[in-house]
Length: 445
Image (spheres, rainbow, N blue to C red):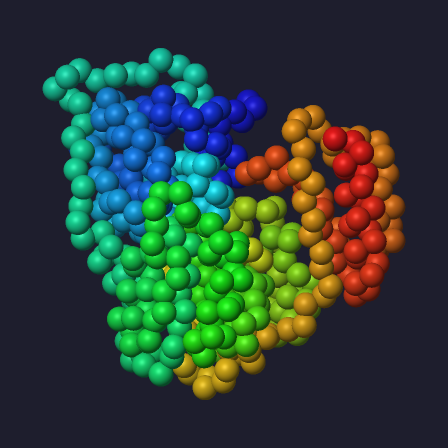
């Protein structure tokens, strides 16, 4: 069965167009609700959202869908995606829903679903829900329609869980931290959690208005954070994305630190403590070759998956790993969360910074990255990667890089772009090969 609704990270699209309309959101609520209504207990779903203007509309539509098939709804208001996963499991709900398009602009929105265990749904479950979306909903009789209510203590519950991810004796009293929340879901909880640990917190991206999420702030636009860290003389900067499931860091010199360096730091620290499991780290094909070489030097492995934190998580569960993530900033620490959690990852970094007594620029430079270049080519339709000239360009680049680098070419699962990435020890060669493949793709589209 071909996927019509679900992509690599739930359902996502431009609001009021295509698959991201209120009517389809209601159908998603009905289909997902029908799939998870099992047994005779009173069923419930937890629904959270980020700060997009369309979140009100999508929330109302989902509530209508779930209640119409007999599920009670608990609404939390704006909270990070990992908070919804945590609350779903903690409140013994049958299903969790996060309304967010993550790092995308405000015009987009999305629906992420979590099972009762707090983990994202499997491909099989998503396909079962897709099949139900094509059928007429099984509406319950009036007496069995679900109820909906908001809870007021959701933020406090999540802040407590975030603080519990570091040891009781840890304090951040001597740290000055700039926290950029992307005008998104963590705008209240992330600064509060770090402040409660004793740090001096300077906040950015904490004035959401419905249309400014990820707009010049957050992990996909860190220039403002870099400037603020330097101007304030801060020890470190923390950048979250719109739904706070990913994290990037800026050191005291204003230099960006990606997810590969963060994974190396966290894994190395856990190796020292004897708490790292699985014998290594799980990351995607996009992670730098330098990370792999660094981990091998520590006697660890780097397991690679397809792009998407859900695939990282699947491999982690299969292999018993407790650290995984993506270069883009998704950090999955299974000892503390069931999905990527930027705020918990930030707490671990800040704790390491305090313990080490070293500046962030030293602590977060765990290895020298291999020259890597990623370029995107936007397209409007068709299958450019199937074109013969594109295939030939890719084959030639792979042959040239053999043994000295890697090539990753893929269509994005969240937007209509072809991503072309190459890495190797020769930066000029990497740039030339990427440009050649991009030119071939542009000709094909």
